[in-house]
Image (tube, rainbow, N blue to C red; front, side, top):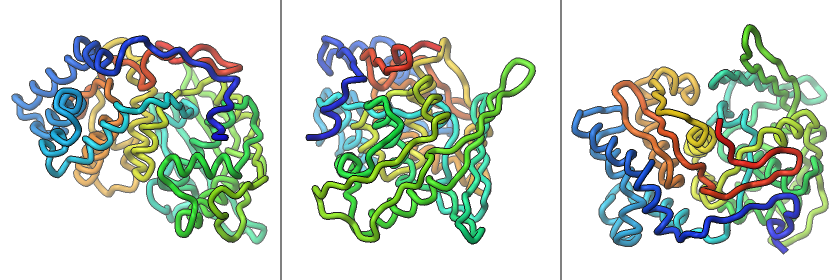
Length: 367
């Protein structure tokens, strides 16, 4: 049986309206503001997202609901992948959720294999340091990076919250989940899973949280023991018996500050590390906003742009991945601005569900 069918510690209630009604309701509030602002940005020739493309991006869900996926794909042309992502999320009926720790919504892992041993990222009132671990001979193992590392961590966090246990199976359940996310564990994918698991196991974490007049520092790691995988990829459906134990401090912080995500969205973005980061960031920030908030290009570059030599190189890559993330988040309110983007108060990506996690409150919450 799929492990998502065995989740006694997590419950949610679904809204009673249909997806079409949900979209119409969204368009009357946040969604309508989003499209209007994107059109205004287009008329003002704002170039931060690209005026015509931004308008099309905001309309993709409406296009699908009114005219169908194929019409939307044809209308979007080279951006037809946006229609594929949006349609998959709009038509998802499983209601499956994933979870992440809120600290990772404001910071991120490297996108490519870094040559450095210390990774530093700054977010909104938070700084993350990740230090590479070493093997028994003192040689650096390397920092976790890319979409595979992100998906492994999403699985570990989701499964730990579903079972209310920091002991997580990395056998059949993980295999099923990765397959569902579009990452069949075999061949090169399995080699990536093994390597990223090794790096995740060895690295050290330090979170710095800004407080009034000072800062809080939390030292820790992702896991207590190593994620060990066999030398060869398992056959599909083979039952593994390996487990890994999450770091206690990390587990407790995650239970206190979990962020619910849609499995359907994670699946559509699973091979796109920056799009995943943006989606998770928006999932955390938008529903907590009390008013529209401008985010400048330098701020976006500081949070998402490490590895890019200059802001001018970062802008087009961020823009492309922002469109992918918004396609996976139908209710997201994000508009073009003169010197960056503007975030609008929006419903959480899990909609009106009330998610209950043992050891924490009811989610999503207003911040």
